[in-house]
Amino acid sequence: MTIQKTSLVEITMDRIKAYILENKLTENDKLPTEKELVEKLQVSRTVVREALRSLESIGILKIKPGGGVFVGDSNFRSIKTILKHHYDTHGVKIRELVEIRKILELGALRLIIEKNIDVDFKYLEKLNQEYYQAIKHGSDTKKYDQLFHQHLIKEADNKTFYNFTEIIREYFSLVKIDLVQNQEDLLTSFQEHNEILAGLKKKNLEYSHKIMSVHFEPIFEYIYEMEGLKENGTN
Amino acid sequence: MTIQKTSLVEITMDRIKAYILENKLTENDKLPTEKELVEKLQVSRTVVREALRSLESIGILKIKPGGGVFVGDSNFRSIKTILKHHYDTHGVKIRELVEIRKILELGALRLIIEKNIDVDFKYLEKLNQEYYQAIKHGSDTKKYDQLFHQHLIKEADNKTFYNFTEIIREYFSLVKIDLVQNQEDLLTSFQEHNEILAGLKKKNLEYSHKIMSVHFEPIFEYIYEMEGLKENGTN
DNA sequence: ATATATAATATGGTCAGACCAATTTTGTTA
DNA sequence: TAACAAAATTGGTCTGACCATATTATATAT
Image (cartoon, rainbow over all chains, first blue to last red; front, side, top):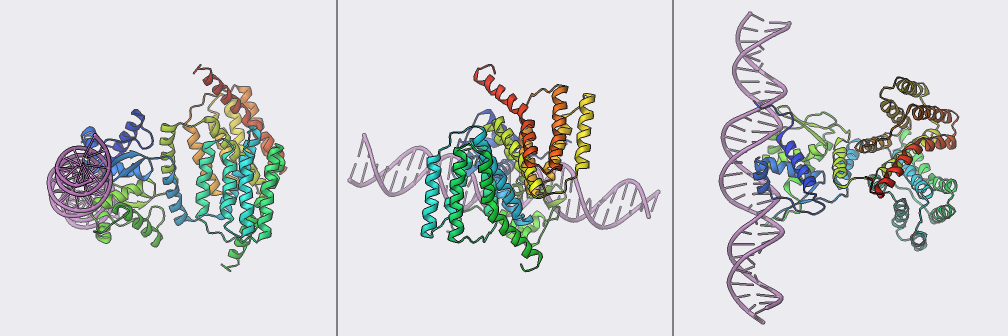
């Protein structure tokens, strides 16, 4: 006779989430065992297990076979899983992702300057020098380029912003891009990094914005070329 | 003897995701029943159910009791669930969210102007007029203010950008903000909306950026005041 | 006494079968 | 043909069993 709008499993999920809150459990803290939860929540093991599984799949829990159930870390891995599937099924316009990345990078510069942040230039210059060395030696440059931009965003002193940017970055990494850059292009990129830093040192938002925009141009050109090819059916 | 790194449930999840891809299933398409999946995948119903449950919890599937299993919509509701819990457990600095929103709003203006988008000014002006009426009548203004900004971002012609912005907006809505605006403040806000539109019409990025920045100032002032109070232990 | 190897226990993983609840389909009747 | 009722389908929950891995306790050797 009891009409229950939401399933027992969902209710149990909520109760477990509430348990975490009430007991102020944090990363890697241990939860009661399945058995204990069955007794405590007065539901079948089936329900407890499905609830635990679901909570694990959204990253709230971490289940160690034979070990126990623990509070998961908050690295948003599950969000990336979701976006991965969304990408697989819906695809994504590369242009859209690049536009977003540009906005975020410009935003980071703005935050740094407007909040008058004491940037760790030494470290950023070191990263860029490693980028330079990689270019000279013809080794993997992408890695150092990424590190530079990643750290720039870290400097914006906004953890949430950084997290979201990382998610976008991972999403972007799903896309295969064959943007070939010869050494000359790479050296230009390296120089732009330096100029962005120079702009930040002078706290000149307009200038650093301008350079960052230029920095993105080759990518947009590549994308427009790709989209043009697509329309021509050249695949 | 068979060593399996990942659990059967995880494998089954992957197989079901693959099934969706292979059969090009889209929103609301029906999947095989639990029974059929048990036969097809040669695993127990327990495993199938836990896999389905997990996929449902991340929004990939939608389970209708008595009806069947269907492909979920891609509204990222599950991501919002994840962020909700993250907010409950970790909290978030309001300042960070406002900073992000500002960056995104400025970014939208940039996209609109740089891509020379043919903005639907008529609609935006209508929304803003409704905002004005709400202010005059002392009714719920927040709604119309939100709609204006929401639509502005829609105009940027970047679905992915819009989706992410919506996620941030929902995240933001979790935070209780008691920013009181008297009629004068609201009229100023209304005027700024108009000026932003004027800037867009003239395709003047710098100007619209400037107004948008001003538009955010009251919120930042409020936040800084709150943070100040916090430090003083005034709660 | 300590360290190591071994056995026992605890914990999550998987399977099977049963029954319940809601939905969908089918069949009957007005 | 439409409305209602019965049957079948489908997911929801429960129980109990056994397996695999991880943890803990115990025995053993040094």
